[in-house]
Amino acid sequence: MSSTIIISLCVLLLLAYFFDITSSKTKIPSVILLLLLGVGVKQISLFLGLAIPNLASVLPILGTVGLILIVLEGSLDLEINKSKFPLIKKAALVALIPMLVFSFVLAFTFHYFGNVDFKHALASAIPLGIISSAIAIPSARNLSSTNREFITYESSLSDIFGVLLFNFIVLNEVIGAESVSTFFIEFGIMMVVSFAATLLLAFFIHKIKHHIKFLPIIIMIILIYAVAKVFHLPALIFILLLGLFMGNIIELSHFKLVQRFHPTEFAKEVHKFKELTTEFAFMVRALFFLLFGYLIVISEVINLDSLTWSVGITIGIILLRMISLKLFKLPMNPLLYLSPRGLITILLFLSIPASQAISLANNSLVIQVIILTAIFMMVGLMSHKVEEI
Image 1 (cartoon, one colour):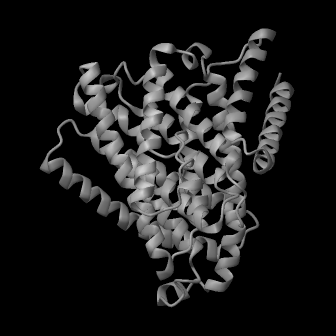
Image 2 (cartoon, rainbow, N blue to C red; image 1 turned 90 degrees about the vertical axis):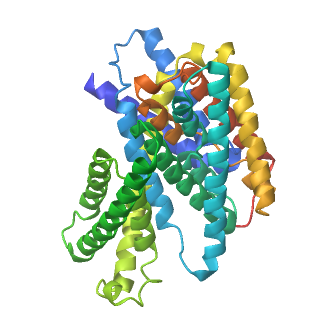
Image 3 (cartoon, one colour; image 1 turned 60 degrees about the vertical axis):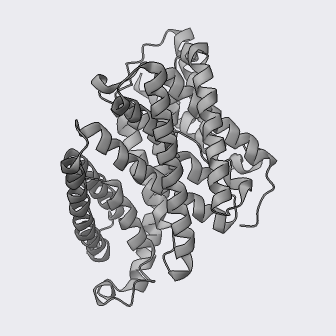
């Protein structure tokens, strides 16, 4: 039995790798193929009568680790200098404003038609308003460097802003001055923790001479993130700041504190670290979407009761993105297509307490929106000419 599991996992991951390396040619996002593969594996296992344990509890774990690695991978790629500030500012505004507008409009719609508490409706709306960096960043790989950077900034910041807002709404029974002040205190604490943890991890990368070096660093990053989450701190900020610091060590070399790390040598170590992070991120992301596809119930995908809502939500996502790109004078093609929902949507949706869940925002709605936005992205990228990278 163990050999069968090992063989199956190896074959599935190799297929995931094949999907990834051919996506630039086929223009089909690997996530769609991974979901279909997961569905196919489930049908085969049912046909063969294989006894597979319930793996639903594994999905949030894979999703959390995947989110950490994907945001870290993306932030390691980003350059921070004065010339990039206009791009960062636009990316931050395009990530934040449409997410807020969409979440509150959808929450009001849920509240009105579902006759539910607005706060509970908002908790269900926020996950659907967040761009998935797990899908957007890999899909932007073949775009021009400027568009690729924009998508990386935008989707990473969308994840962070969305998680901050979601936790604020879900964890506070009453929204008022006290809850707002608590939020800013927690944010300040996380900034201090991020600064200290970043310097500590940089010190370890610089000083560790053992042949096993980067895996313990990744484990410590996940540990710090998990501990911060236990205390309801905005832990994704730490991941973003760590990646930006490590990826821009040369740019920061004029600071005396940074000079102690010998920036040129440190940058070489960061390059090795980034390669390992990229490969780990690929593996975890592939396993997550394979498992999600495996756990999909076909009846939920073709649920006609939620299809009207999911189509309406998808159209709303596209229209709002068109407006935001127009307002900020950004290229409509190809950026319009790159606002998929995915890993972060699933993670936050699974995190909604049962007492705050609403019937309108069900599994069918979430699955359909993820699939529809992924298909829209696929069709858009297929029609888009390959850019000079």
